Length: 455
Image: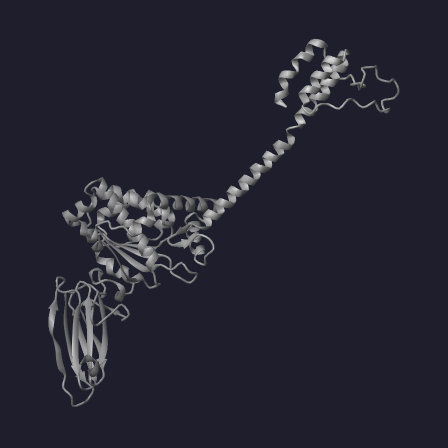
């Protein structure tokens, strides 16, 4: 043991240490020479040593006159010394192992309690959908996915997501910049980003005027996303747990103070909200944006970029209709969806057809007797003539002009609604004449109510 080291030097002054090849000889109780018979013969037992090992070493040096025997006695004292701490070392090792095991168990227990987007990351039927998002984001590499998940959990704590959910950030005007309406053809909620609203200098300054305002806007954007995830997405095995984003770039500001917070938001969303975008549609894309997009392209993963779709002003509505039914698309983006509409909802399907250049199209809508017909019609870009008439089923009936033919310009109302109440069966005929050299998209839908319901 280390505590014995200071007691050894006095023995070196009494006699030189014998060679290692020399076999040690046992000493008897009175210091006489050992017997010469074979080594098998047992020697008389030595006196019992005192409990402390240090006392034994000193006693042998003083009493025995034979240096070799003294050295022999010292060697007997020294040899067992290193073995003494072995049980303690072994015990320490076991303690460390137990401590690590307990720490690992505690870490695992703590990990089991972690929730992300309101879902426990283990032990819940929705956990698989959460973990799968991180695996997909890292090309199904478990180690990288786990590192991404751990980083996201830590970021959420630093950013204060739980407290942010209920915070009032004082930005009610942003409800017209970012909002959610309807769903796509596969049931994904659709979130619209209307950056043209930032043409308002007051709104732009309120969002991006200085560092504090930009920080508040970033928090608001994360808050909106978090609330949407929890209220509109379903992480159960058969649920829809991703969304479609539509970004309208019409009249969007080009370069400015918002660029910094935009890049910061992109980084945060990619690192901490993986695989939440089923499709991202950019509409009314100006020519300059494609150049900007090429500059920002390195900030996106290849998997993210594969979800992007770009459409210029003339193709925006038709591009949306590929992914989102017209009855789900808001009027401002070319569809027929309106809030608080007393006659139609997003559950009322819209029919669409193509108006050929320099042609006339008629649409017949049957009407039962004693009923009221309600319809709405829209031609994207208008520049057509439109009229409507009622034709009774009875042979001796008279055709009734419901809507006189009128020319509709692009500046006219986006959607035209008509009603007709009748006591006899027949049909309402909508007549649309396209005098231009371009084909146009025609949308329409109708609903019939009995006269009793109408009253």
